[in-house]
Structures are given as structure tokens and as C-alpha cells.
Amino acid sequence: MDYENFYKLNLHPFSSSPDDRFYYDSPQHSKSIIKLTHAAENMVGLAILIGDIGTGKTTLSRILLDNLTSSDEFEVALLVIIHSEITPIWLLKKIGNQFEVELETDGRVEIISSIYQQLTKLKEEGRKAVVLIDEANMLQNKEIMEELRGLLNIQFEEGHLITFILFGLPEMEDYLKLDKPLYQRVSMRIVLGALSPESTKEYIDHRISVAGRENPLFTDEAMEVIHKYSKGKPRMINTICDNVLLEGYLLKKPLIDEHLVREVVQDLGLSE
Image (cartoon, rainbow, N blue to C red; front, side, top):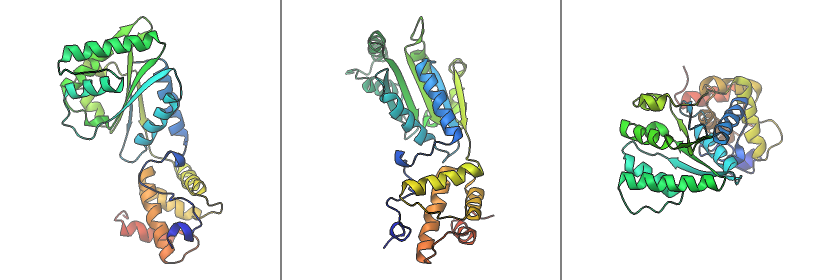
């Protein structure tokens, strides 16, 4: 038996991996999605979402991707930057490939020309080209920023031919400022903060409900302690709750109380 069976859960409720089934539409997450959708619909050129580690940036990027791709109005690409050593040519080719541009050259001018032709074609078809870049704080050199600005220079009467929406850690802004004309083109800036105590409680209850349990599993006092030591960051909430449920199962505790949570956060090295 594992803790899912013991607590009558059909799914693992606090996985560290993004899972749309467990998405909790907190007030700030909902507001962010509405704003980012507005940015895409109006082709603002450049929008950024900034948040600390574990606040839900990747989850929001996937929710936005799903929302936009469900509409024929958009042609959407998602890039996930996993290291900081990428080159401007790599980025340009990746963007082109995402929009089904056949590129057999490393020539910058040829690549940009091919992307421009495809963007023009999409506009003529009535479609809007949007590029979502997750972990955009990995874009760390001025040359890449200059290439992004170059693509944003491709405009028509009603606005931009392409819109970039960047998701990243706070230092992403410092890298954008390496090319000041690019940073001045940021049309929308969203800061994703931590969950409030009330939202933390609703977040935990929501995930447990989605996992199949109807009855409460955490006391209110336990959730207050979870919020305190997680600082309202969803990823850390998941880590604490997962460890707490495992410990609760080992101790055969039917309800998670604040004392057990304090013991677990101490084991995790999170206590003051």
C-alpha cells in the first residue's frame, strides 16, 4: 500500500511535474492568463512574465499554449531554453522551424528572410504568430536580444507580425536590458507572486479534490504552517505536502495536523 491508497486518492496529488489536471486558477494566475491572452490577441510585440522559482511560470506557459492553440486564430510556438550557451542563429532557426519554415542554411539574412515570408503568409491567412519562451532568463547575451528586436521590427499597419511572450526569473529583465531598445519595447510586464494564505489553502484542497478525495485531509492549522514554510510557492507547497502525506501514511495518521507538518519541514531543512 502507498499513501494514495491509504488516503483514498486516485491520483498522486502533489507531483513536482506540471500537470494541467491539477491547475488551480488562483486570482493572480487567472489575471496573468487574461493579460497574456490580451497581449497575443493584440499582437503587442513583447510581453514578459517574471516570477521566482516555483511560482508557476511553466504551468502558466502551458495553460496559455493550450488556450491559444485551441483557436484557429493563432499559430503558436513554445520554446523551452535549457541552457545559456545557445547562439542567435540557433534561436532564429528554432523559431523558423516552429513555424514550418524549411531552413537549409546558417546564413542570418536568409533565415530572417524566410521567417518574414512565413509570417507574412500567416498574416494573409488571418493568423497571428506567437512565440512563448519558457526559462527565457537563459537568454543571456546581447546578440540574441538584438535578433529578437530585429524580428520585432517586422511590422504592418495594425501592429507586429510576431509577438514574443517570455517567462523567466527576475534576472531575465537584466538580460533584456543588454539591448535597451528591446527592453523599451516591452508592452506588458507581469510579476507572478506567491499565493496568499487563503489561496494556499484553496490550492491544497483543489489538488486533493482532483485526486479523488472528498473529505478534508489537512487541518486549517496544518495549512497555515505549510503556507509559512513554503512562502506560498506552489512547487514548495507540493514538496511539503508530498512528504507530509508519506510521513502521515507511515504513522497511520488519518488527518494531517500542524505538528506533523512542523516535523516534516524540519526534516526538509526549511524550519527557522
